[in-house]
Figure (cartoon, rainbow, N blue to C red):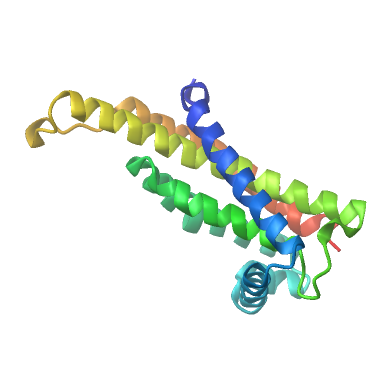
Length: 197
């Protein structure tokens, strides 16, 4: 029921991810210098500082997956879900996040991840598996923000009557909890798949 009530907002967030990612892919493959330089900078930073990446580089795949999952959940999904209470705010971070996912479709040597079927499939599957739980969490937050606005607008935003829609807050909690295994599965595929070349 919680997912059903949030489905429109979830779909809008997922669509934003896909459109922004497509834009990033096109820019990277057209040789856009800004996109390529941003992609190189982000990848370099991740390789040097990201716990999941550092664990993966030394062969600790499970630790890498756990770090990736917890990072995505606590430092990206939950903050953006809370931004959803502002309704339009998370769409900016979603668009940026999707764009980043697109520009890294070309590596530092400007080789496309679509140069082979296996690497292209791996890249797209990882993106989709990440976009789905993010969209669920953030979409639930947006739906809660809409309900919050509708209720308090109807009572004139009087401080003594200010109210959080408990049903929507419960929906957010349920959807975020339901997304946890999806984040973990996505991270496991990313770090355990033999298609990661």
